[in-house]
Image 1: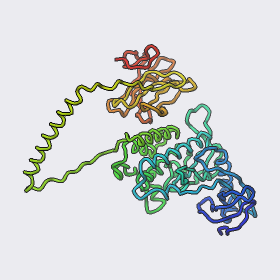
Image 2 (image 1 turned 135 degrees about the horizontal axis):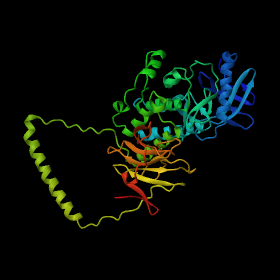
Image 3 (image 1 turned 180 degrees about the horizontal axis):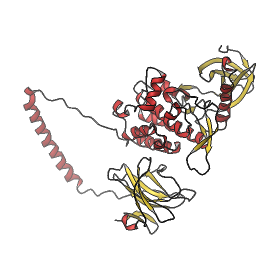
Image 4 (image 1 turned 60 degrees about the vertical axis):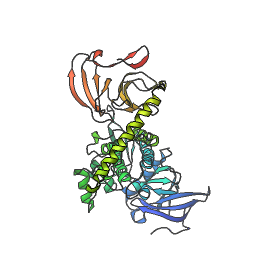
Length: 461
């Protein structure tokens, strides 16, 4: 039964219930020692005898308390009173994401602001080897000031990098038996739905389902039962975001679609990269340069009886337009052009080279060996402020990026100590590399249109 107001759990006095879920009941309470308001989460009494659930409850405290981040709920204390296990945590006055999401989805700037904060929190958790495994709108609280707090690491699973592998993770402490399904059905990743081993990329998928719902007001995978929802997650592709909301920018549509790919290797591989992509979209949205996926202009046909007047009006408008254009041409011909202003592209620690500008001139791809000055990888960034997006990783140097004419892909060379070079294509937003040619001799520098000249990274024309 829920705890009554005035009940004491150690030094905490229960004030009122807040909510309930699979991992316990949550109450607003007062810390009598420090005289502050806290949130108390208790394990339901009918679950006390379940050692597995009790262990997961304790794991929430261990996992969340090890993370120090402004977008992750702070755990103050863990205790037990009269057989009741409880957590004392930071109290956040606000609403959950599902309460804030309108029927037709959030405004672009608002959802990007919230999504970037969630991605930042998950990036911190993943760096610590913690996978959330139950990410959903009800587990994300937003304060009245717009600050996001990610809740409930009760289903978290500890992982750490495996030796000899760059990105793979292995389970260190599985809190459930093999084959057990944990999480909330409609936000599960395909591998989680099949009770397969999961890593941080499972959180990327769950984040994508949440972002889809924030954008459209609809869940990407639906069904009349849990089995039907699981089947949709495993076998069906969700309706494109652009079909539901045509005004959504193509860039955001592509980010969401990449998060929701069935194959984990085709999703964003690191939450850090996803966070950067969202932050760049937020900057573009705030500056007003983020374009919509389509602009539809409809004009009703004129009635037959009025067609003559339509032609007369159109002719008059054309004459007026020509006159205005001629006047502007005369008045502006003598105005000198504003001088060009240099804009620094990159100034990072390490070595940067082989710059290549996108066809629209808004982005630059380049080679950088990172702050640790190690392997050279391909990076891409918008002209101006903002962090670059890493497109490659591995043990071999990647060099000489070149853009495709449509600006969607970047080709580059990858070499090794045996003087074998591969020409590889990667999507401009990142993704799996497609190797399309291999040569056994070094690719000549003359084959590429850029080089490093006299200490300045400039195009060679």
